[in-house]
Image (cartoon, rainbow, N blue to C red; front, side, top):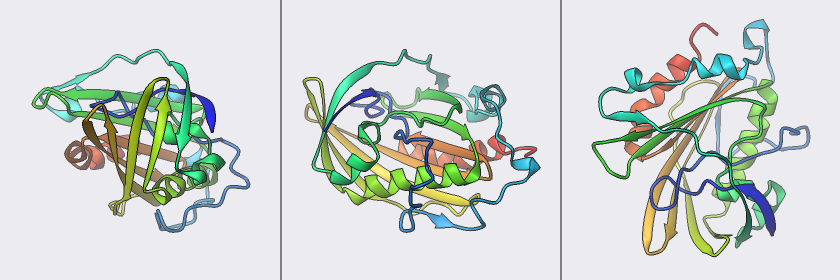
Length: 231
């Protein structure tokens, strides 16, 4: 499978990893039943769950004062679109190559910030916020995590670079209405990079925290609290 995607492979050995892309047309997508722990009705919405604008979500992102000393926000990089070939994961054919290569979700309302942590030369943490109808967020995110964790190992060819990817489903903390979590190991050029991704849906808000496993665990609660304040 050869597709055009926004390149974002890994957080350390390759480059910044963001959550895989999915289509906003999720009417036929089957929510993941094995990769998420569900509570509540994902399709129930009310006035307080109306989707937020990208500008409103930008104000709900963590900043350096929330994270503490040693963190610096990275400037956003211009998107690059490269040919990517996915090998060894037929399930990803149904969700597109963006999923395998770590592009951003395609929900129109979004905000993102990435921080480096100076106490470790290769530690980063990235936060993404998306807002849409609860059912769309539920179906799209579940579908992506189901496909990715269903393929324990596969390979992505981006130009002349071959990246081996291994995935492992992990238990997400029981926060919000739905939760997903996985570990991804990127191997390229003799170096490995381990990235944790945890996704929490609360109503019409989806929070993704990705990066060094320790940093994801450390900042997930405060990211969710700030993202969903005054909902």
